Image 1 (tube, rainbow, N blue to C red):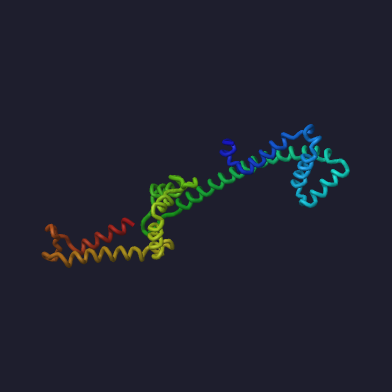
Image 2 (image 1 turned 60 degrees about the vertical axis):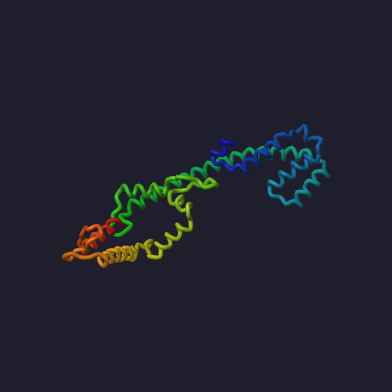
Length: 240
């Protein structure tokens, strides 16, 4: 069973087939000969397998019994059932192997598509080019399995981060979405940061004394206010 599990064979279907195999295997011509109820069951199971409705099955079984062919029909049905469940087990295994192969092939295609898309992406934030190191980190973050859920579902880095505080994660995500960053609209968000930097520097120039056009900090260090603003803006833009 462990081998079947590792091969992704659906255990519920396999167990059902196996149980029917064992049940049928324990029936032979000798213990079938003098057991009419077992004969009827074997014939009914076979006809049911062939798709006959219950009313038709009852009618056919009754007819076989009436003409004295119940035993002969049950022998033939037993042979057919044994062959069927042997073939069904093999079919389930082959289908599981084919499904596993298809799933693996699809996974490879998905990974190749992700890698190709990342490689073709020159920048996310306008003006900031993505180098190979950054692209590799993005790919790893998207594709590496770093944990599993309680149900055994693999999760990547971003799903793991979200799981720690889903509400906070979604708030931040929706905040960014409100600026249109997922449509490539970074100017509004840059404007928010730029305004905040400018406002903060402007507040400092208003609250500190000036010497010869230069702002003086509480610690006695003087800096040019216009240069400070320019430096802050450049730092912000380069970090994006």
